[in-house]
Image (cartoon, rainbow, N blue to C red; front, side):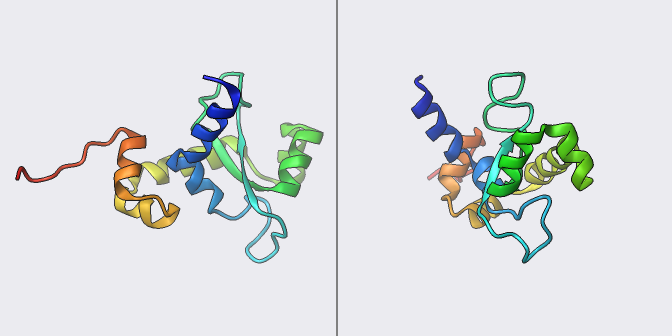
Length: 124
């Protein structure tokens, strides 16, 4: 799989789409001036899975986080990437496919297929 199709696949995963819909983890509601981007932790290519282990940062914070490093960024803003990611993953896992569909704009069928969930339909 080439890098471009891998990026496309990542951006279409329901958890990543879900994280893009959230506000920046640093800025309070209404103070964010740039779109939310999923920030991977650990970074892509190290030990993290490509579709999970992301937290929402606005573009400004995302750039700053990479520029100054994660530890400095966390100290500066009093946030924890691991804590935020763990909370979001737990929250996401509790949502039904219909709830994920409503938040992300993806169809229930697409959500279930991409998450590997079985659709429980009555036999016709």
